[in-house]
Image (tube, rainbow, N blue to C red; front, side, top):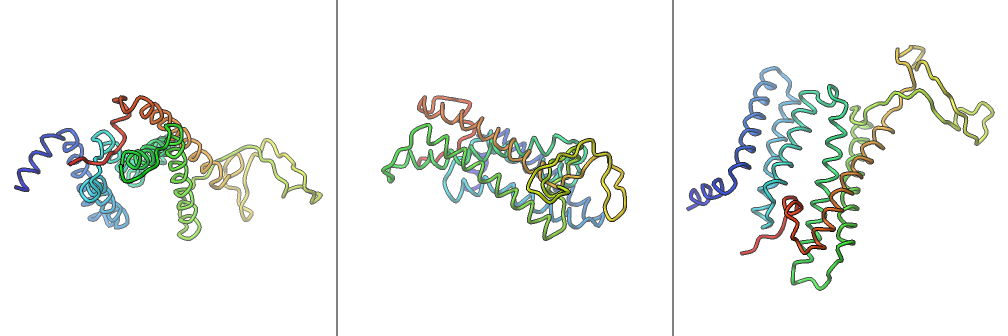
Length: 258
């Protein structure tokens, strides 16, 4: 009986199953290679990726929430792009836009999840309140931005306590500073055309000032903001038209009906 239901599920979700299996096989092959190369940190990162792959199906099975195939495929690709390509294959360093792309997508996905949470409550007869389309979009936006901020907290904590570099450095050629005011006044001075940065008497060989993490964090939050706004607008019109939008429906989980 269980085998028949599995076959039926695969038949109904062929594209999702193919993507899931290809990504899973790829991660397993990478894990084997990392293990035999002695890169045990990357090996455990692959194990974590395989665990994260099971989250959508876990939510569907245990909470009876239908995750649309399109959303599930994007989530799987997002996890693979962040962990395997970004971390192990060093795409974060090879392609400067990689981190920006993932943070933008994260803002979009988090807004979709936040929107679906409110939408499920709105459709549940046990609850007496009904939020307007505007407030549903606002909740989705706020939820996405909160997730983005929490992630930046996590990156900062990893850098401070585990000496990592998740908040990437940025080279700038001018700064505005009160601290560097030679007279000790609470007045900003501007330093332009910075040619080098010296640490402990050693020139780092860069033409500019090394900003440690601040601009990277602001950039991540800004692109998260863009992704959140885009989906919030989509979600607003989805509710406004009483769920007629086929595009939005691909990204909004809903409660299974029995």
